[in-house]
Image (cartoon, rainbow, N blue to C red; front, side, top):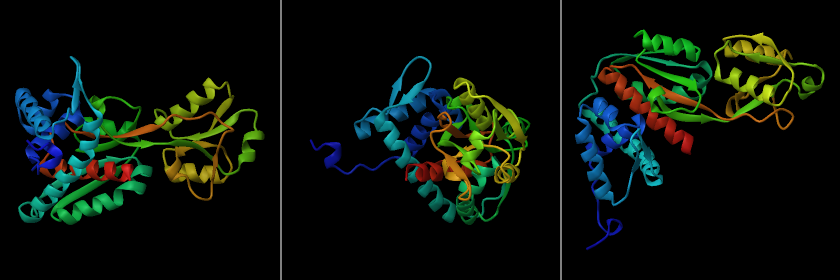
Length: 292
């Protein structure tokens, strides 16, 4: 009998959608709630997909399921395939899909990564009204819990799927207008967003661990305000490497290393069809961009 590699395998999109749901939620039960299937039905779908591909996709323990290496590889491709399928269906059947989708995102991440994704979404669903709110993660989570948002991209510590689906890792760096700033102050002046902020926490934790004295020199919820303070030489800050402005200096080696931060997509408890479509767009596009 020919092996999987020697025969043509037609992937079942329903099985792939169940697989993606389990991978994103870390649970067969939560995946079933998302795709309107029972836990046992989802488990059966995963077994069928594993048999079809002759690979193990998840490792299971009593508390949660985790992707295997093969599962991680398939997840990227499965999201691409599902997104292509949904774009085709949208063009034929759902082109007239209507409604409003309310998305929240941090200002810096929205500016750097979302315009192209949202443009593709609006092109695929021209009758959907898209509302985007840029704010601090704390405020986005509050808005989501109060029903004011459907989806929110949030900055967070690397956590499990209960606090959103991870979509992006950010390499954090120290940024200043001039490296000489490090030598001219007994206490390192910091520029940051108000607490709680992942970048602020990263900076303070790293400096305290290294026993480096510091003081909070400038606090602003606005990214533009933080950049202005940096250019004025008021202090140093923590930013994702790819978002550091070209006219500022990335400080290498002189300050303690910073662990990565994570961006996750968090959903409201109940989503309209249009919001679920946007979630799929965001997950597929950001994962593809991040793996490029």
